[in-house]
Image (cartoon, rainbow, N blue to C red; front, side, top):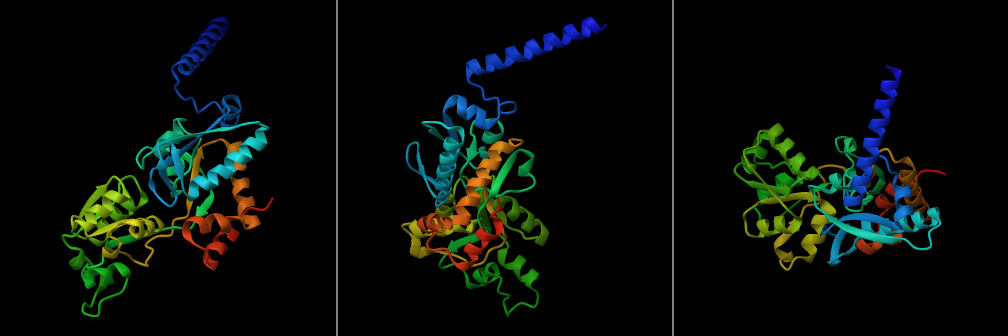
Length: 311
């Protein structure tokens, strides 16, 4: 019996080895066994995932040429990887992902690091790990500048004087409104939860991108677009119809954004967090921040000081 068990185990290991070899031949990523830094050392390439539609965090200036705040941070991380591995050269392979498949791309090993805007949630931690926070964000609202004053007041959190109960007026004012958010984001999930909790009778129309959501608002197909407030602000400012749009000051949630990377790869995560901590501690983060968001205020600087890890 023992000889049969040993023989079966050998056959199992042989089949597993053959499967890995076959996967390598056809280019299938095998992220569970290979650690990121080992793979990068062998391949000489770091694969960076980014989104094309989340400016100022990441966007595409030309095919395969992303830019943005998250990209700038990941380029610093790439420099640290190169130095840590003692590589003479390190190629960066940029892989475009969507809001729907970005975490799956990390989990399946198609990218090593997700360099876009991503809220670190407990549910998402089932599939990926997250770095230290990189930006203090939250859900905001964009709507037409000529939207009804009552709608703007309710969304801004100002209780109208003409209604005795805020909850009742919210339901009445939002009744039959069309609310949008980018599919696969925390804004979409938050919107669905709030709608159910408040008993609001309104349609939720997911959109594939912030640009698509703004087009719906401008065309009056949607009354409000919810999403990461920094992205809404940037998109509204750059829009040819900027005068027709407003982004409310209110933050509905507090959602620090982070970079996503493979679960269980503590060496790579340590390198990422050390690089970010050094950037925050040195004060260089202020220069990077200013490039994409303007000079950081005291609240932003305090945020980075609080999340910096000591050596």
